[in-house]
Image 1 (cartoon, rainbow, N blue to C red):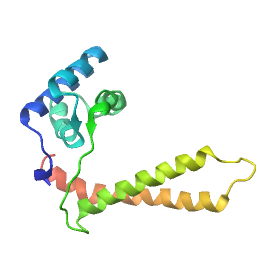
Image 2: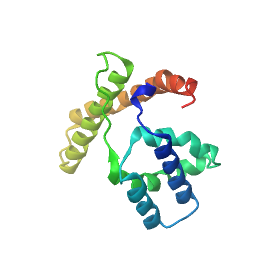
Image 3: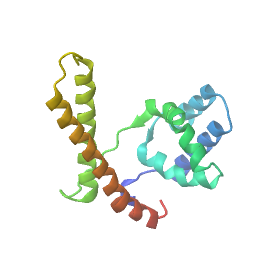
Image 4: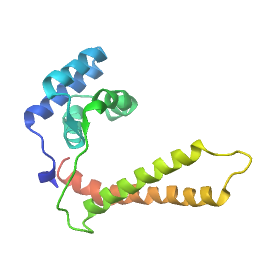
Length: 158
């Protein structure tokens, strides 16, 4: 898995420094400018993930990170690059997780669209019951990630 996460130590250090500035309360415009100037306005999910442990090592607690992560991600989001991992064998756990992530996104897009056209006086109960069943299955996806993927990542101190 590590071979799929492409990032230099310099980029990771820069990301950590920018995140430190964010948690130190520096202006968002300053942080965005650093992101643009020092990282070219691009970051991958893998790079962001690789920076999480060094961020924690700098004394930024999981709780503080959790409370403000949405604002932080909004700074990086315009430059967040979609990562592709090619060449995974069919049925390989990462291949399965990736395909499930795509299916979850498609389901959520479909439900958002369906929600826009709900007629409160004539709700298609079968559709929404089926949709609820699909949503419930998403939990299984995350439980599997927690039990299969996270222990592997933790062994690698990731």
